[in-house]
Structure formats: C-alpha cells, structure tokens
Length: 139
Image: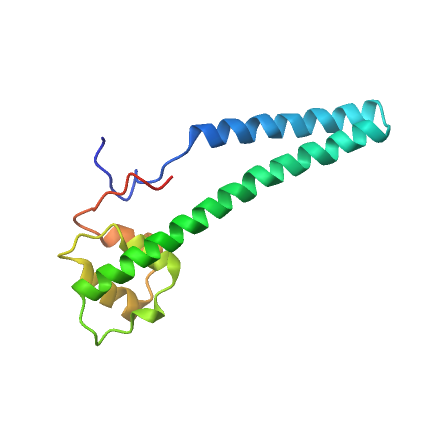
C-alpha cells in the first residue's frame, strides 16, 4: 500500500459513489418523467427514488459515526497509555481526536498538549505530524 500522509490519507468508497450516482440519476429521471406525465404513479416514483437516495446517504453517515466512536475509544485508550494524567483530554472534540490518531506514539503527547493549548483544528494537527501512523481501514 502507498505510504499515507496528510495530503493523501482520505479514501473514497467507489461502490458507495457508484450507488449514489445511480440513485441520483434515478431521481433526476423520475422527476423529468413526473413532469412529462403527471399522475399519482410518477409522483410516487419521485418520492420513492428520493427516499432511496436519502436512505443511502443516511446509511453512510451512520457507518461513519460508528467509525468515529470506535476511533474515539481507541484513542482514549491510547491517551491513557501515552500521556500524563495532568492533561484534561476531555476538552478534545471528536474531530481533533480523529486527527490525532495519525500521530506516532513518540510525538503524540506533545501534539495532544499543543492541541489543547492552542485549540488546533484537525487540518492543523495533521500538518504538524512528522511520523504519520497510517489508517487504511477507515473509508
């Protein structure tokens, strides 16, 4: 696998993108068809196709939330091992925690402290990481 860094760590799920594109085209076609031939059935097809599109995106959001919760749990355990108890890590928000997961164990404590002191954004955190700890499982 390719080495990860702050510029190339994002991943796209081609199956999700293809499915979303298919449903998006279906919504467009059903709207056009309903405008050309307005009746109860074509309007129902618009509602149904839009519902399917919304459902696909909601399922994606739910799976990302589960991944965020797992990452948060993993990083809380990692924090207990790597940093001193005098830091109040409860001040970190989920996006900061998710960004911190890429930091190596050696630079993790200092980066957590800097994030708390300077209220760094996830993008700033990722830019400061010197030794990138890859995550190939999140999509």
